[in-house]
Length: 317
Image 1 (cartoon, rainbow, N blue to C red):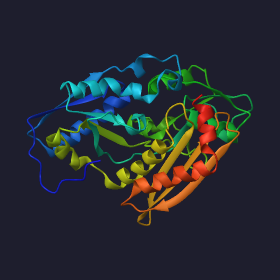
Image 2: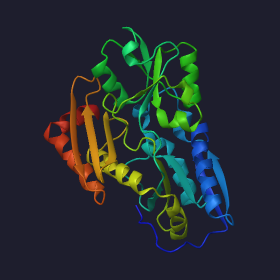
Image 3: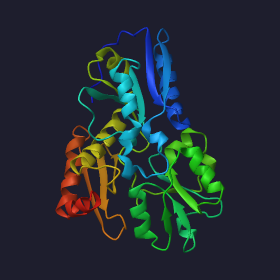
C-alpha cells in the first residue's frame, strides 16, 4: 500500500477503469468514476467493462476452479497492456498476493461488512425448520452454518446478485446468504430479512471494502487515487489480509478474518474451520493501527498454535 502523498497530484487528461460487467461491479466502478470526476473535473474518466473467467463458469464452486482470482486476472491483463489505468475490485475477491508489478493503490471506505440472511418465508436462520435448503458457495459461511445449524441443508449458489435472488424466488432455496454490502450498494436493502452478526458469521477477509489496483510503475495514477484512500478501512483489511496470507487463505480454505477500529486500536478476530463445521479454531487480539500486519500475523500464529495447519492441510487436499 502506498502512503498518501502530501502534494496535490497533476491530473491526467483521461483515466480508464477496468471492471467486471456484473451490476455490482459496474456500480462500484461508476462510484469510483463519479468520485474521481468530482475531484478532477478536467480528467475524462471512462469504464472498460469486461467478462472474466469467474463470471463465465457458474456451474462449479469457485473452490474447485481456481478461486476468486478468476475474477481479477483479465482485469490485470488490461492494466498490463495499457487498455486500462486501474481496476476496481471487491477486495474480498482479490488474492492475498498480487502479481509482481501490481499494487493496491487505494482502499475505499468499507460498506457494511456483515453477511445478510435473505428469505421470502423466514425471519432469520433460527426460524428455518430442519431440512431447509440454504444457498451459499462460501466455505467460510458453510462451515459456520453447519456448526450452528446442523439440521439445515447447505447447497451451492453461484451467479451474480440478481441471479442468486432469482433462484431464491423460484423456490430453489428456503434462504440464501449474501454479503450485505452488495445488496445495499445495489439498492436491494429491502431483500435483507436479517443482518447476521459477526459473532454468528465472521465476515470474509476484506468484505465490504473496495480495492483499487494498478501497475506499480503508474505513479501518476497512484497519486490521483490517494484522495479515495480510507485509512481506517485500509488498516482493518491490511490486518485481515495479513492473517489470510500467513495461512495461505483461498477459496479452498474455510477461514474468516474481521478487524474493527475501536478506541483508537484495532480489534481483530479470526477463525479456521473444517468444512463440516465440526472443528472451529478461533483467535482474537488487539493491536496498533500503525502496524496492522503484525496483528494479522499474530492472529494467524495463534490459530496455528491451536492446530490450524492440520485443518488447512486437509482442506487443501
